[in-house]
Image 1: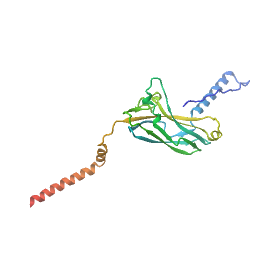
Image 2 (image 1 turned 30 degrees about the horizontal axis):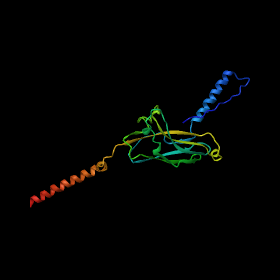
Image 3 (image 1 turned 180 degrees about the horizontal axis):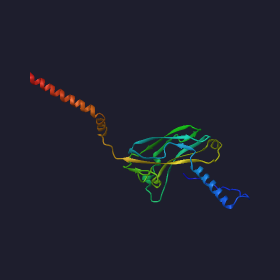
Image 4 (image 1 turned 180 degrees about the vertical axis):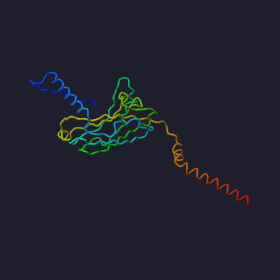
Length: 221
């Protein structure tokens, strides 16, 4: 998230030393920048990386925002691709895959709202990692590996309703998708057997015992 900065003028009182003025200016400036870089809205997910799906699938995720300020916030969602020279845009830019609903929102203090992030993988997508250069993109210190983001941005609702241009804040949330190879058609059957292996073994034992019992009865005749 880019931080907006402005110059802060501090009056030079006659009884304040120049060095003290510099310290005061520095403290106020740091505090101002920190406020600017902090989102006024809380989010329950900071990363949406290494999601898995096959070509043609639609991955559906939920993300929640909460109003944490004393005034209502009005905002919206959008997608962003961090372009770099020489980057593989076809592999890294998956913003066309992503739809966020609802796109616009208003949050009052303490209110939470859930949003649906739908990621539609193209049918011709080959198995690979998309939207990030490595699976470590969700780890601290790996911001350079994040290429595709969803972003929420909001501002004071009263200012927005009046058509003003107040200070907006928000967060960038990286998104990446691992497109898997063609699924094995036998996988559902294998999973069904694995889930019911105990029952299947019991039935097999019962069948074997019945066969043995029937043979013994037939031999006595």
